[in-house]
Length: 341
Length: 245
Image 1: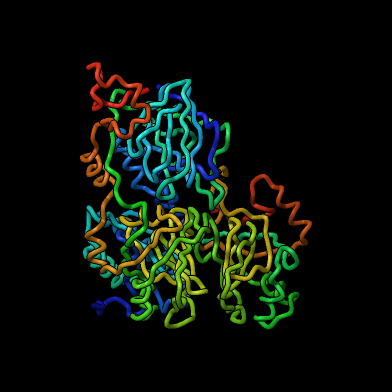
Image 2: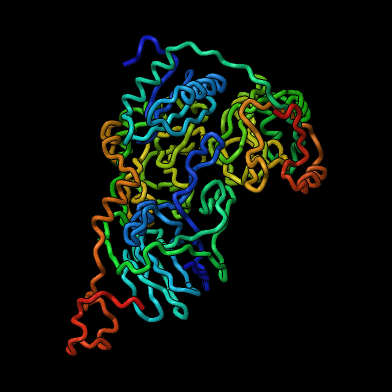
């Protein structure tokens, strides 16, 4: 069964995102897609999907949603306050929204990007194989109040509610950096200083990437003559003309002329994208061999996460409406599956 | 360890966990024909585990599936291909004539750039219009061309500071090249003019209008004419393409 999800109220930067449009670098198109790809894969593991589905990405703040048919969905990524009508919802878990109910998602409590993934995915007219909005090139746009989104059929509507443990990627931390084609344009001292410096994302960060701020001297190349424009990939750490680093993310350009001191490995990009303005970020150099050994293809990540998914057990300490439950009547023991409505 | 058979002005470097970048030349000069022909060679070789192969101004990017093949194996194959002589095929290319408005609001840094090239603004416009450029590569944004080369005197450095935003269609110069911006964007290059040409339109039969190797001429028009050309529904801004392949 399909459904239509209506956005009653949209947060300031909500977009439809999937894994983007890989394979178009020669035509100047960066893949785009979800800023935190791990969150899409977590949603697929929770919902029991074979491949990640198109989701609503919510930067900083969610919105209000209603539906015309039951929608099973997962909440992943940055933890946000979430309610169906008045009942609070567990993050990193699956739930069902029924017609007549209102799903309200508030501000992020940690991290930056939260994800609402319907089990049937958001369908619609794909452009070059994807329904993702790519804001920097004007493909698609931020979602607006009153907009409706078509939802595909749920492949396993009877799957019980599931949950996944939260990992530690929301609070900044260490980003592992591998060498790239222009690393040797920076001397050893500059490369060491980069790894010894504490950075914060600038509030000007966007889906294109993170300008990073630090205290201290700018980072300079050995030879100030900039190299000729060359390929840029998501994860590349560019040193701009003023000597400050800029971490390329989903909607970055495909080539550029400022040198890249190294590349943050794909495994750590979700941590980079999620770091709030207040969370410190640091770089740690690793060798190419170490980086290659850390490569995790999305299919394996989905298998690994699927193995960690557990049925959702209600924790009495988190039940706001505890008094309305019959705790002594023998009907509920406080350890049942959360009611689906 | 450099391989004795691989030309020593060619570097092989990692680019991310699933990429190998083969770079031609000293890092400061464009070699688009070398990059394109090597890209075609890699695609034609049908190596196992190779995914996307893309070419840029001076390099060929080869992406691989680390589950299927190791970086070391990919590099061995690429070295072997580099050591094999290749012919750089000359292909019939198309010629585009694209109307452009220079100076004023459409090119706020024309006088600045012309001064650095030791030309008056009028002479700078004339020199740009007289030069037949070629699409060196497509990149930065979808369909967006890097065009070259202008005469030597146009070997301008980038600005130290970024211009926060140039509009779509902007023509910016640096390093003897012109970029025609597909979208509003920050840039370190200087804006000398503007076109109503949209290199990428997802709703067009050919979403990406230009191909690497196409030849380009700019024909100067006034700002008002350019605004009118912007009404063209195909988003080509009055551009004419000869020699459709």
